[in-house]
Length: 385
Length: 145
Image (cartoon, rainbow over all chains, first blue to last red; front, side, top):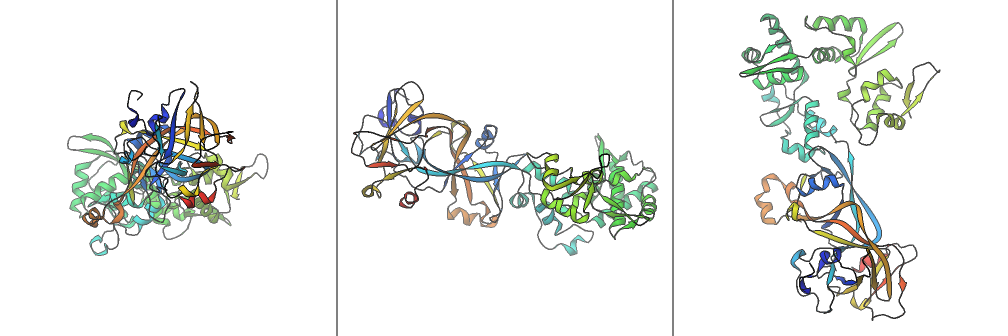
């Protein structure tokens, strides 16, 4: 830097490497102006390489506050103003200003030019992905058995989703999985529960007919039998993914195991879709629907059903945690509308998935609930603040 | 919509920008307000081997130091596509017509957090520093720019 002729000693470089007992003339840049297109963004050192290596995007609709997404995280972007004068000085070669400078000040000192006075900078705050919108837009148009006749309205490819939903790629993938969405002909869809019910029942029916073990289902057999029953191959695989998991990978396919909890929850939801039921009649119907190989227990329905005592009767009704909003304020508001007072063991399944960066579950409870304890050895009870 | 953040200078070569920060506002004399280009604001000196600096603006001298930012900042430049490209891209709607380019990284600033001291004599100023007691931005400045 120091060996270079004076005409090159301009800009941020000379300022940052100014030697002791020397000076630099600070002047307005030939293109000094408001430059609203130049924005300062403050970020953690660990995010810097993500930004420099082009691994971040800004996402949001024009009416939403923009978020910045890395591969795995989402950050809200906030403007923080300053009352100080922040002179922004680019390197010498910025925007090819060139040698019109220096005419007024043919000095022996190098110069650095101020391109703009920055009114503040943007800051990042890690936030939870905004996935409620994903659920709402995919629910507008469920995939059902008479797909051909009902396919109207908007369908969304992956690229449409990242344009619409404020979440990082990883969070969006996890969100699609949590919704049991499936990519069909390039579009991400949620399959209508009634259609899933038809496929699952046919599946279990076939397992009895063909004497399949639900713990080791041979993929090729299952798929070919259900395809011959008229179900699209893609939907058969989807059914395996939703209600089971692959336990073994073979050269020509794999071996799958059905997940008892997911199958049992499915049938419980089906029974309670029409409304609440007395415990005895619910249990009777539920146990009858579940395949013999499976051992159902009422604990499996944690986060899916609520029980309440009305007189001498115990009633069961559906309240699925997956149907609730993911933002804490909305989640607690709905929970306290459902029920004014909650015991911890009932409440916990409905809030354990809440994810707020920087807030522990204790902090969430403090913020959104009032905790009371009727007596010292009684269970604490949570109510709305 | 999605805006890709790019770095067209290349991550390794992304140049360092600098900030000079001071309280209050620098006010330009009325006769120069419409010809700011290349106008000198002041002289920044480093009197010793320490990272202390003086900034002389008109009759005023500020004393400050070079500090490393707690967190780095990047300078983003909004780039809007030309109309021609928009037409080619019409099928994919207007959603992809803005990009952000990282044109610089800032790790240091030279910060003057004290009020200026007056110099008894100095060069004829073309720019004067005006700092009010509370140190807030003089609203007339931004409208003049």
